Image (cartoon, rainbow, N blue to C red; front, side):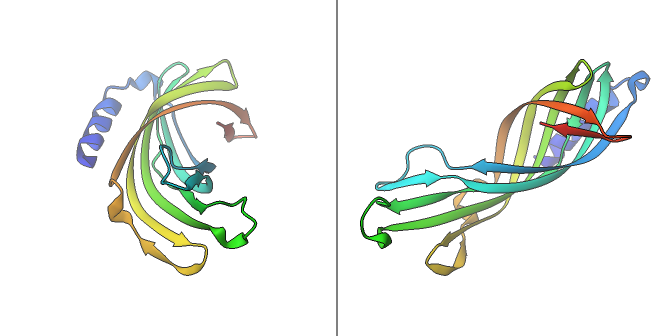
Length: 174
């Protein structure tokens, strides 16, 4: 799968015109909040946890104000699963399990700059699960549950952002 993705990317990059050969490189960091969707188990609910990530950014200019952006990186995410009734008088009637996942992501986005500061983009990302663990608030250990999840994840990306110049580099808020 990765071989086909790399081949398609190289073909796309080979068709770009040399007259628009501006190339941007950078790094990014992110803080996210995620939780599982769908129907929770009986007498349970999902709550969000904070995730962190970072990536390298490589952009090649296709035409004026349009960039193809490749952003390989690492991201953590997951969810808490709370079992029990937390509104009960007895404090120990809830048990929280935390599921933490780590992914190596390869997003490919098309970014369109509108004016001098705003941009919008869309694309897709392929994520490869590198770890998945479950922990309990009462037990000081984690269990590897990577085999309980699919090894790849494909998502659609949509973003809007603002770029500002801070000297030679640009700072992006997306």
